[in-house]
Length: 160
Image (cartoon, rainbow, N blue to C red; front, side, top):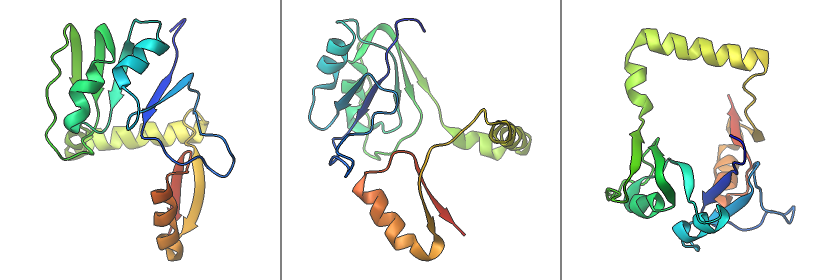
């Protein structure tokens, strides 16, 4: 979309040894555990608010996160990592789309189509996952410790 910016939201983590905080193509990073998300999102969008918000956490912060959306914006919930109840956003107009991938895994035909799509994307290079670090299965404790540090940019892979 012309004129769009990518703003990344997340908890503030210690700065990695590189001395710079990872910003995967982002124009701005908003620390959800320290910043007023709505105020920061509006500041970074010239007062408009976010067009689309993707939330994989849900939980009690959902309504506050939705306030970062522009009028007529879209909030996509694609997971529920925080098991606590989520309050329903009341800032309208707002389109809310809930997505849960689990129902797709119950249909063998859909699972085959998903696998074929992913395999083709990886084979052709259209899908290129970012791998931060690879650990062997015998280093699973170190892999978990590295994950808990929160310094990774990309996926942590454990080989079997």
